[in-house]
Image (tube, rainbow, N blue to C red):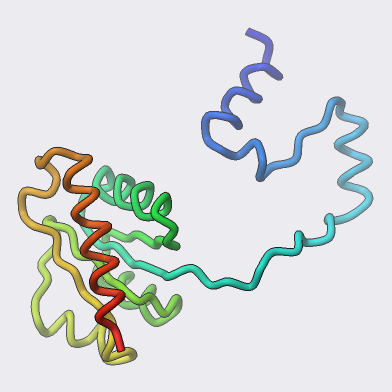
Length: 152
């Protein structure tokens, strides 16, 4: 398989084809680079609801990121509780989701809520990772929507 075809396939599979510009030749790429950055696209200034997810499993975090991103949320994930606190302060999420691989003590939750008392904290059930994926995902998205409706 030619390298160009392989690279194109990788960009397509990873959904980067629309993010990283591609060029028909090296000369075109050099010319585009020399011209400087393209003007930023005009997009509506809508802010997507942000969610921070915390769990010890990279696989679960990847699933949550895909699931919640497809549901229209902006998702940040971490395996480290102190990084979760930093993400909460830096991103101002509306929801924090604790996976079953993380200890969600009341003191930790209260520390997260110090910056925003309306922060919704959802704890996933211990069987979340072994439950039927589509049903568990649907239930979680509904829990997120419900938590957002209840925020003041």
